[in-house]
Length: 148
Image 1 (spheres, rainbow, N blue to C red):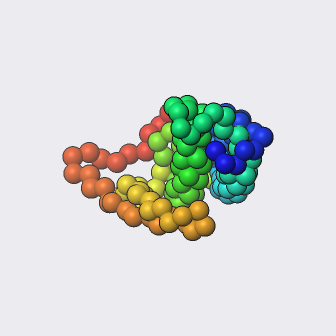
Image 2 (cartoon, rainbow, N blue to C red; image 1 turned 90 degrees about the vertical axis):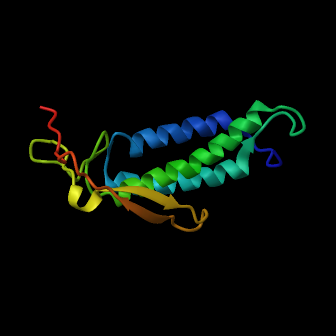
């Protein structure tokens, strides 16, 4: 509330969403995601220097609530790109352009990426730390899907 900047919370939210869609959407590549990470860091800095939140802190203020959610979205968005960059494969609904067959099908890497990722937040100025929980499949066989 004390920033008293010139840009609405909504404007930052829209810009963040567009950046995420354009650089870390369903189809992505390492170069675009590295660019995206830098863009989100710059936008977050701008947010904390130039956001305008109307109203008061002493009453119910939906704009203040929205600003807190958007602040969280910056951290979540950056974490999404960190996780996506860590996985050198195409899997699920996320297609890494660098990992596709000659026919354009997604190439999974179950040998190296059959785990659940849990990232430990260390602050804005530090990379998060990856913790892995290995997945063990006893009753199903892992297969690459074909969309043909």
